[in-house]
Length: 386
Image 1 (cartoon, rainbow, N blue to C red):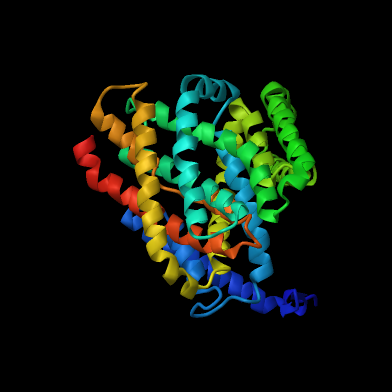
Image 2: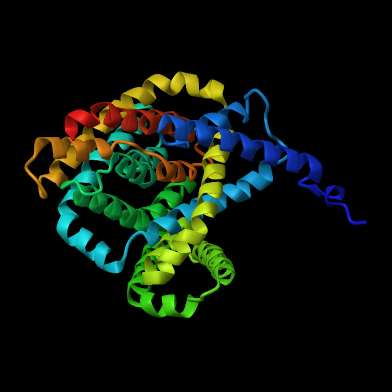
């Protein structure tokens, strides 16, 4: 009789790997339940869970490390793919046209905060640029949850907030290849790779916008099982192929999601949402799993200062963007506060810094503070701002 526990993964017995993986996912489920009961995003709890069971934690998970790593990569890809499904080419065009200046203000105010923090800390320019990316990008997942929980989707400032998020996601398509090269320390010597990567993003974006209807028709099928296998396989193929030609895998997945339209996009969102939630949880958990909690303590104070500074610039960004939609000061405050939380994409950027662990450590503490503090501040002020 064939036994599933007769083999090994990376030298560890399969039964041990399965037990560790099962324990990790069960723990994440408990954390998700706790977050749902408290009405907050589970992302900070996933990060805390990873810290508890990572290097220097109470019970390190060593055997399932490789499986969790692959799962976390899939999580990053699915996060951006599902985000791409939320938008159409028309929405992207409207957002770019209507709030392009707001997007520039967003970049100009928030990226320099992280870059300056890195330089003040004595980091090289490569690490500082990565930190600038971390402070630049708002968490679309957290913002979406807050909008749904507080029923603010119909508020006058919401289009401005959504446009900012779209522009950030579009900017990431161009910035991630540059940031990945910065993380490798390639510098100006690899300018050809930078140009090639950006050109590949432009071509892929144009194909996504122009061939979306044809692609959606090609992939459509009435069977949920067929669609699940088709779309999950397509996401992994596109992500892997994108990485091969110089586009970040997660960006390739985002462009694929952007290309899908109509009922195909709706069906895909319904089928892959549970997978996205599972692998995204593993993504956050695995990121924190690589960190030593003892290393976080010295950076809590700098992370708090960075969070306060970048929260002020995000509030200013939201105030500016909402002014195009409304003159109501409460609406402007809501827009600004909604942009404060950082989360999944800040972690994606920090995850590029494999050879720059100081970025990941500060980013983890920073994301914890903003991901918890942003939604809490919104909830505390929600009655006054409604």
